[in-house]
Length: 282
Image (cartoon, rainbow, N blue to C red):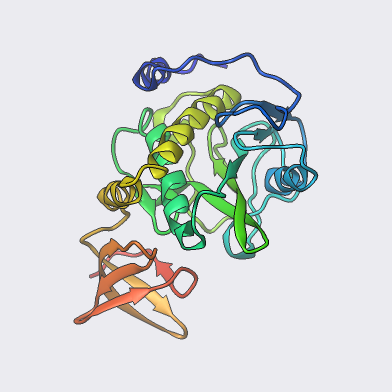
């Protein structure tokens, strides 16, 4: 496998961080951790999100714990879909986030922060045409490079933890049976990568954006950054709602996480209410 390109070390310098030796034991309850420490490498698991949530519920994992898998046998995607991935070829990562200082209404804020962190990470290797497709898919042109699934733990009316599952196509070059126009980092750049090293770098990007979210003006800045890399912003796209479809101009995503569009009159859509139809208008 070829070495990861120089952009990896450049991004390390940008965030001014050093890797800490990996541990297979989780930190104790009195230890303040950062995202990516400990980093748990699993050869095979049903789902990194399922495993991470089980660890949290058993009080064996805290904020920052990261679970990477070479293979998921029951990987989870958005809207109940299955995330397919060839063994040992891609980045399959779930991280534990302590959300007790966030409000229940901040769930899109966290989603946007995670999506931006993933965009930050990929932008070190992909210099053009990289966007975030609302709400949190990573697209290169009109092809999907990665996706995010966030699952929450709520206890006593308090949002205590979120599990952020991130799947990024790294070295896989064939995607049989998929209709999502998948693309991998290798296909885009022509290089092979060490997925474990990339996952650790992604953790540092996640740490930076999560800390930004904790600032008093963090959410506003995150929404601003998010809209700057929004897929199809300012362009006309075809969206399906129910049994009908129409052309709309993508405007922005608001702080409630709604997609704002114009179809003659301004409209807002909530996640899960529309389907994107990717085609060129004649």
